[in-house]
Image (tube, rainbow, N blue to C red):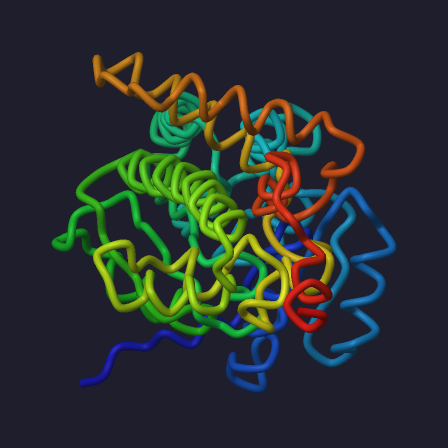
Length: 323
């Protein structure tokens, strides 16, 4: 007998750069009779998705209102303070109503302490409810394409893994159980620390090669063929017009904002200190993203704009074509 993973009622809270395209995938792929209740503090975004899917998406007045209508809730908000508010606000939060037997999935990238505090509150007050951290990786491009990865804060043997995997597979390609509560977040912060360091290193390596006379497109091929091969160089190259679909090629206007990378990088450095891990690149990396996030030339742009912050040549094509 096949298991029923229809998700007849689903809540989605947080319709930002990542949340909105994730919601669109759910609206397009869930069974026709499924209904999605949504909430975001930016009411215009809620109205837009309701207009886009008038027969599928319904507007909630608060996180509490959404929780009262659905069996499963996905949250995707920017910071730990927002997660606390969404779940624990005594008047309008998810936990201000009876959430017994509900499945709750937080896809936000936040500190592990906040996630554990929310999980503990739910376990103490609603023991039959299930809360999971499930941060994502793959950026806005991946969210739009439906190729993001989910890092689940649970063991492979968790009774809800199949249900969670089915739900996440509607929005992404890889679902990886990471072992237990908050370990999805620990994995994500470790990933973003590495991703952030690679973006800085790629920017520096590209710059030194280009200043030596190399075409960045040739450098990209060299990296792809050698031991420096990595996703940042391949698909998110910080140098504009090396990879056409990279945010850098569109003026860094789409992608993972540098302020968010600064936030995640800071969380990763804090986590490293808390667990006693030595990071020789942590402080200088954080200093770099802190500076870029405050630079008017870089603010609100994709985090690979660190190439600009470090003085990289964005107008290299005119020099190559004119030579």
